[in-house]
Length: 305
Ligand SMILES: Cc1cc2nc3c(=O)[nH]c(=O)nc-3n(C[C@H](O)[C@H](O)[C@H](O)COP(=O)(O)OP(=O)(O)OC[C@H]3O[C@@H](n4cnc5c(N)ncnc54)[C@H](O)[C@@H]3O)c2cc1C
Image 1 (cartoon, protein in one colour):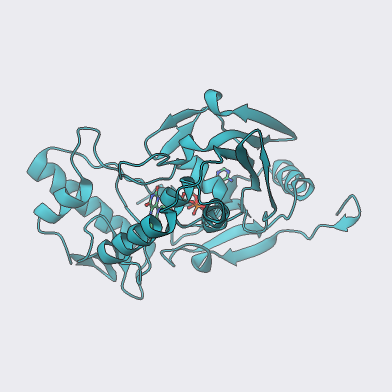
Image 2: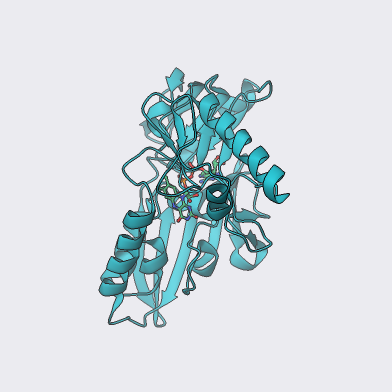
């Protein structure tokens, strides 16, 4: 199929997704594509519509649990949407980035200008689009501390049009944003006042060190599995107090370093991880009467589990 001057390839059939998520688990997408621009996205969305197929979006894959039975329909991988632009205007640094630009690239831009957003972005994996979906950020008492604080607008592709949604129209929640969907976050506009922090390098080093000391970054994981309860407790502490550190189902294990991380010991399946999530929820609920809510998003065929 042709869009403009370029030839768009048909989606791949039966495409393995285990290499495209940070837990390194999961089955295949019935169909998979990696568009490089909005014309290709429109083409693939139309392709799916015509064939009456479900569509699922995949960013950096650092917050998803993909079923061993794979994902029905078309998975649109956003990893090739890599263009960004930065400029200064009216004493603010502006960055416009397509969904697949990594958070670490955005962090590097803020760092180059010694600006505060570099701090919360330090060590955050995945892409900018996924960062907005999840309102990704850190628990520390810093400002800015999550995407909500730096985003001005997003452009969302809805079927055959692009809609501009301003920051104020988005309903920002703890590790979630609402009010923009359904759709694909295609582009994100961010900005921050040009007020350099002299000690940004030093603080960044400390934050990175804290992460390496407290998180199992050498193992495959999706970061924190559960949100912290709104009542103020820390999920990791609750899980640890239940004695679950090191508890294992199949090759999925509750990290001994950080109890809110489940790590893949090598050959874990998605169902191992799912069962460990369920077991953890049940154990914490029985002991503390608190039902932990997963932060991680389940993708694919989970209905009969
Ligand atoms: C080691 C490690 C540490 C982590 N630490 C943190 C942390 O400190 N703080 C934190 O908040 N998170 C953390 N995470 C979780 C994760 O990195 C964030 O949630 C991240 O923002 C997810 O981005 P992603 O691009 O990987 O999204 P994905 O995992 O690909 O997707 C997440 C969800 O968003 C949807 N989606 C993705 N992109 C788009 C798009 N463009 N349009 C529409 N829908 C989309 C997907 O369908 C899925 O439902 C960590 C993860 C790891 C592995």
